[in-house]
Length: 288
Image (tube, rainbow, N blue to C red; front, top):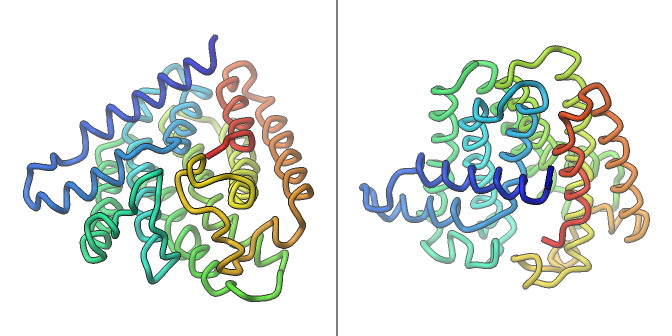
């Protein structure tokens, strides 16, 4: 299998589904729908939906059963990005190489676009199978014990003395929980058993932390053109990051060790996990 081509195929399936399911930009309220589509269809790695699809394939016969959960994940993820960029949060002007939603449409519309995408994610899951377990996974990952909780602690930690336990909490919740949900939702849609689900959960927890460490590194080493958003912003806001706490090279080493652990966790799935093995490498070797 040509993994690069296959991953491109999965991403294209996600892009097509996002465009198909999202309300048209001519449907009222048109400005709101334009803002939703602008943020959701404006590029991105599509890592979470691809992980969802690949996890379904790793435990079942086909990934198509996980397409609705995959789209729901990307809708919710994009909502978090829109709100994260707001002046009251990180106050960023650039996302995925283009002006952030609030810069393009204004703060009020950006807030509403994020709210609408969050709600739409659960509308999609209501049509999926098994609806209740999938919705629970996403809700738990997104709330005060997940992304929102991680963001709250991230904001509160700005300017504070480095704290390893707090940093792990922030990264695990703000980034890791949604990646964990992506793999578990794909597995649930694919008809997983307990052994497979446990393996994918461990894998996801490892790559979730590695992904955020890689983000910390890229914020120091990349350029706005490569990254599609501001660089050096973590240091400017005195954010708590792996690079700030441990240094650049130890942060890279930690991410590499986590990837090795993630790949080892996939052993019970055998060759069916080849795509997930490749995705683990991508989380730390990416340039954006």
